[in-house]
Length: 363
Image (cartoon, rainbow, N blue to C red):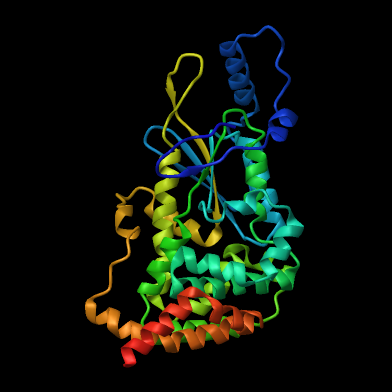
């Protein structure tokens, strides 16, 4: 699997172990060109022209003949991992695109036990990292959203993102296959989501996330294959906030569509550098599939969904004064998520700075 330095979607490569384990032995004496041609032909032989794929796979095409096999997954489902593996093995893609960004790429190379422990523990380091990446308010909201994922993780005893790790592993076994990170950077998503909410809406959302406690079973996950469990849980939580649904779901549908279309550009055959249609596998939460289908043939402008409008001068003063209330609410919510976080929040430089600002404002 090659690395691809694309400016619009991040790419990473496989481990050397995968390359040595899954690629065939190269006969001695072959030139570089002959080796590339042998691997190219091997992949062509493995690629099925009319594969029988799971019902969770949607097939889309481009005007130049490139094909996208879009696998809709549930993030906490073993059967989704099987769907991903089956699809990649059958179509032998040129590119695999997953619903991750560079801020979440670590889950691809961590083992299940480590991920399970990480997902259950929300500590000071995670709070500091979230605030550093997203700002105070967006960072605290991210911690509360992590609590939703941790709740499902604890209920199921299963770490999230198994289908992405499966895609990464299988892509490493396909000659010439590139691996792209196709999701919008999570700091942009959180900043736009928070900016779209009023202060009262932020308080209500934080309160709802704080007290999420409904039991979930593995049977519930499989029943939710028509809509990813994590996204369904979030949809129920944010149903009262259309602006939040727009930023977390609809805008990411647009971004994912853009990166998937970029991945379906024609590729060069190594023997003659001739451009040939690409075969791409996309791995996304099943809740994103309808939006990607709807946007597939539309003209898209992702610049509109990559920026956060700066607040007005009045808005800055207003939010500075009222952020104290939000900190109290979100701090209590994080305290509910983990009792050590209450004290941890008070020690953060960002919180101390804000308290100082509020004192000056009061004076």
